[in-house]
Picture (cartoon, rainbow, N blue to C red):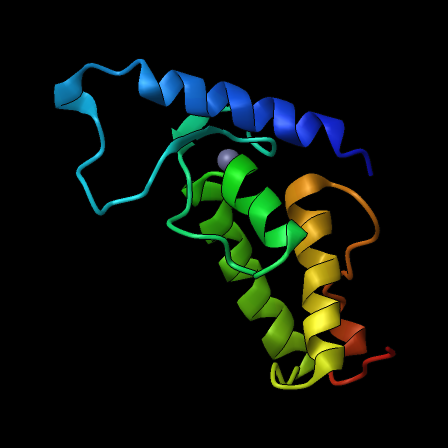
Length: 123
Ligand SMILES: [Zn+2]
């Protein structure tokens, strides 16, 4: 995982936003900025705020669009149901973080949803 591309893309999207005419500026208090989404490659509004308070959350906030994030939320719900995850446990959080990264940035291993594995989980 390199960190160089991250700051490069962030810089580009901020510069573009500031070039917008005043009447197209986002309303004050509404922090949604366009991002060039790493996953779908489109320039679209990003999500409101980082979903996690760490580097991964920042990376998602700056590089993933709302559309792809919504797709992940649906996928996340399927995974939670499929594996009967208790999201209050650290194990479930680790599991979802691993999968969110695989889903959005196509790195690491995603856990599939295999009907024959219903109810089973190996950490
Ligand atoms: Zn996207």
